[in-house]
Length: 251
Image: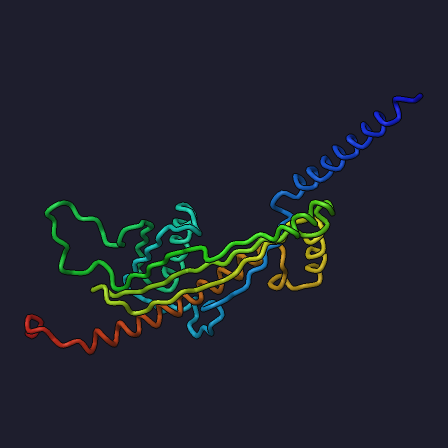
């Protein structure tokens, strides 16, 4: 009677399983974040037409406070980075920018007993609040990517919203809107390689790999923020010119 056959067969099967897992882990480690293809899809607000040129001096000498509030979509450090980038966007358009990234109001903190100066420190306040609307993974796709050694993609997606409000120096609300978009992430060596090969024949601005989704999202976001702030500025100027003259201002 041969008692070694089943034992050897079971051992070979175990080695085969370990080898398969090892190959899969090696592919995952080799891919890392480089085998993730991100696709950005503009939704509400982000695909609206833009008339303002973000490269023009649209806000010359306008005192603008950019107030970024951390939320469940962006971390505190990411919120600070967003504030700096948006501040630079408006500085390049001629505005005098002050950035604040906190949960509180964007006004300067006052000491006890100190009164705020009559002269306002800002003309317009742009407040940004980021939030995640929806997030989902596709379990079947991840099962397939494991079974195919990442040849087939594992898919996850999330929908985000950037709530925007713009007020004048008195706190009057000039503009309020919400910009929404979706980001789809496909993980796997197969989908990454296919898109990388397809991108060879495309212009640089049309490629999917290489951070194209981040670039497209930034262009849409900054363009919409410029347009909304310009609309608020025009409304602010009209309201300021039509405001009644106070008796103390009459010579």
